Image 1 (tube, rainbow, N blue to C red):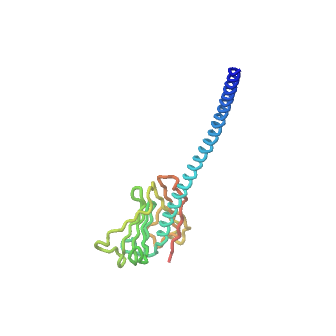
Image 2 (image 1 turned 90 degrees about the vertical axis):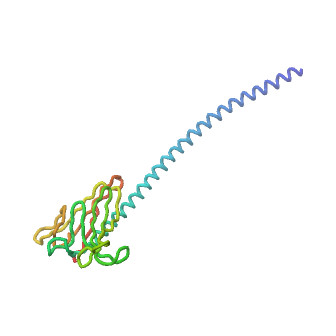
Image 3 (image 1 turned 90 degrees about the horizontal axis):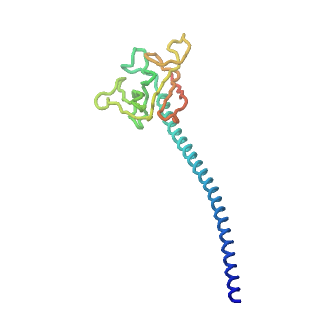
Length: 214
């Protein structure tokens, strides 16, 4: 009797264990399925995160580039229709515009530079766009230590810079875009600034600057 009772108990335990083993397998399959779904969501989240970071980084680069180009445009826009010695013909203004760079006279208000007229030279130097600044005295560059230009790098990672000039040097000729503006008796009406960067994400449409005529 006791043996039969013991055998029944052993059979019940064995049956219960077999049932638990089957349930554990189902739980394992469900866990794997849930893990696969979570992994998919995680991978998608990481991809979206990378895209968002790349978009944010590109936006930051674009903002910095746009601000730097606007600074260059504001500097060119400060050109004065005046003449300084060595600028060319007696009736010519001190504006020398070429496709790869330009020079002109601008007036400093005495903040970051000493007050008064300065000769500004904007050009590409290697992979940078630089501005050389020389103070003028009596229409001539200052002598001595002050004659050495102060150089400022305004853009880096530049592959090329192309400048264009719109206007006419003869009232009888219709204004048009030109690749240079040399030995003229007036500045151009407009200056086009197109910068090509090594990083193509930084490239932007040409910036047009209007110049004062008097």
